[in-house]
Each structure stands twice: as structure tokens, then as C-alpha cells.
Length: 404
Figure (spheres, rainbow, N blue to C red):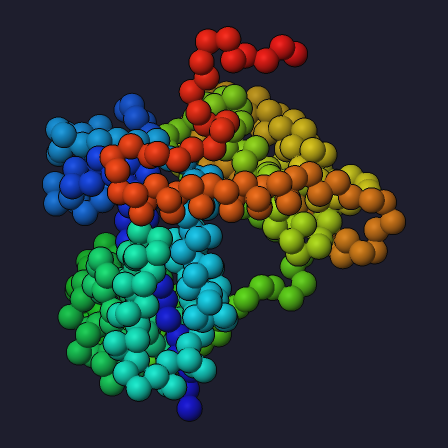
């Protein structure tokens, strides 16, 4: 018996999360992203998409398409907590779950779905339950491989459910435009079109014929695509790397930046999240690296090794800050679109005799729980303005200031 995998993809996640926080925005065209000439749309709700607004689009272009567009800046801390809430509930049903990104995950359903009398009804009920509990809708793809499950979740949105068996590949996938083939990038698709490969079915035919021009164009991916289209490929869900050698995160910015000060808040948050992952994995590292990607997609990196190894954000943030400052100093006037941080040369924390500073992992997790509870209360209340806030978020009255 083959495996049964799910790919679960949150629908217009950032925009939906903002609608949960600000119910008055429901029904209005909404986009998340940076403002100004260099701003980029991260995502848009389905109302805005009807006007042609989409992710990766310059903000000024989105505004020209939709004059009533509401544009909000990203709040990744909030989105991360909403993601934890959703996928935490999903994990109750499918314990073998791998996060692919903040808004998508793979699940191994091999030991769950076949036991259900009606798997389709079961998954639809699960979608409804998750929507009711979190306010977030998802699309689900079901297949024997990761690629088939991913293609399935992309087919119908929002709240789509698509099962792709090996016998369904030609019927469901062949008619799709070549751009929808997950794994083929934006640069390769136009090249394939110039060779007459307009649909996935055209690619399947070219692979069967062994067309040399297509093989040269795809390189090693030619054999991968062939396997995927035959219903073969990776069918594993990876809970966690057994012994990671490094932990890294990066983020594409909403607009290009030119100075360290413009990206310091983002980099600091990334450093803290990497440290959190390292603490959970009980790993410490002895090399820190900062990477920047410019608007021409060139990577720029600086690293520093130190001793003893650590996973302390209070130690690593000053290092990352200095590395990033030096990088920006060497790139005057260069537009930067991505920042990232990596902690490498990892080893088990238990091997260290020096007591590590876990900064505030426990406090951070408690903050997550508090904010998630508040979000749930406000969502279920369904009022236009949130009734519940943390004390620190409440507006201060005159005379409420505290002396240092």
C-alpha cells in the first residue's frame, strides 16, 4: 500500500489574519505589503484579486488597479502566532506534520485517512472545524507524493479539496498551463513556451519523446519531472532533521532598503527566531552568518566564528548587527531585497559545560498563548473593534507614566 500525503495551504493567509484582527475590513479589497514606489504586495484577499491585485506586484500598480485598496504593513509576529494556532490544531489529527512555510504544511495521512469510512467528508469536516476554531480557511491536496499533494492544494481555492491519484494525472493536470507546474520557475516557463510547451500535457509528451531541446533546458530536472508526472517521487514527511548542521531563516522585504537601520528590526526578529529554533532543538552554534540579497539577486554574506558555542539571542544579536552593518557599508546605494541569518557548526547543548542563556523562550511561548487566546476571544465576539487586549496594548491615560 502506498502512502497518503496531504498538502494543507492557508488561503490568502496574511490578508485573512488581518481581517480576523480587523473585522471591518471584511468584504473590502485588502493587500499586505510595503507602501511607496518600491513597495511590493505580499498577498491580497480574494476581493482585491478580482481587480488584478496579486502577490509580488508593485504596490503602486496594485493601487492603480484598485483605487479603494486597503494596504496594511506586515506583522509577522502576529502571523506566526496565527500559524501556530492553526497548525497546532491540525497536528491533533495528523501528528506527522512538516511545516513547509508559515502558511503551508505536509501531513502523512497514511495511518489516518484509510480508516475513515468517507475520507472526503472527513477532510471537509476538518476544513470546517479549522475555519470555525481559527477563522482561517485552507485548501487541501491529497496524493501519493509531495508533488501531487502540492498540485492538488493549488487547484481549488479557497476551501478546495482535490485528490490526485496516479490515474488522475492526465485528466486533472495535463490541461493546466505550464506555469502551474510546481517546481518550474518563472524564468523557465517562458523558455518552455517558446518551444511550444504551453500546458503540462505538452511537457509530458516532450519528456516521453525525449526531446533534446527540452532536456537541455531542464537539465537534471528533466528526470525529476518525468518521475513526478508518472506518479513517483518523494513521499516522505520530514518532522525534523535528525541532526541539523545549521539553522537559518531569511525574509524577502516588502520594499528595497539601502541602510542597515531600515532592516534592523527584521533582522533582529529573524535572529531571535533562529535562537528559538536552536533552543528547542537543544543545539548551540559557533558560527553566525548574515546574508543579504540585492535587487539583482546577488548574495552578499559575512560570517564570524566564536567560542564558546551559544544559542543566546543576547549574544548573537550584537554579532549579527555588526556583520550586517559591515555588509551595508560595503554596498552603498545598493538596493537590498532580502535579509537572513544562520547559526552553524551546531553541536548538542548537553556537551557544553557553560550554562546557556535561553533568553526568554518560556516568556515568549507564554506570550504566544496569551495573544492566541485574546485573538480567539475577539474573533468569536465578531465585533468590529477588538474588545480584549493585553494590558501593555491598552492606551495609556495621562498620569499613567512610570518613573525610571
